[in-house]
Length: 298
Image (tube, rainbow, N blue to C red):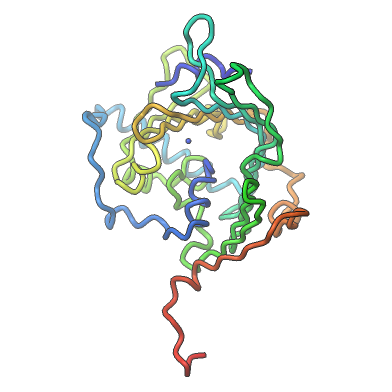
């Protein structure tokens, strides 16, 4: 399966996964924009005319209102990864280096699940795609207080307890608040944004975002997002890695209901069971950040 041509010709979770993975690595949450060190700005940040700025402001306000109404959401997705090792078809068009399908679940304000179910990856030696086990794909769960990450290569299930300042907002305040919890003021402060919907597109809204600050530029050089015009829910997102060459493309199931009545809050966001042969490891970020206790304190 190849992405729709419109996606494939665009100039990347975790979506949410990237933010939670950073937290799992013990990194602090993103600082407020005013406290960040500004990144080297793009050569030509977009200059908007007054009508273009007004249209963007109106869209972001409507998008924020829509996000505030989303309490739970669940969908399947398809992902394509492009890099320097990506093969090309007979016409010279670059194909994905890896393709995968998975599921994404969310419950406001900070519960999430991301799981790769099936994937295949290009093997340059055999010149063909090879199926990878679904158990080897990225898989994490956040219940708002801890992040549970399956590290299949190391055969580990790692729990990272979130410090209090990251609870309740870890997803919406992360490096990529484009899927859920987007706030108009926050987006305009953190990114140069503009509407780039092609003239012949009527049922979608396309947005381009460039990072203003180094903290975001370290994660991506550009993000392009497609929203469904009818409900402003995400349809697809393309994430350009730093350097602008490698990119990940996600397409979400457009048929997914806004409110997933089948979502099981206990089952989907509970602490996962450690698989047989895996080792459970607990990391407490808040404990690591706390000052050493004195004898009296103990």
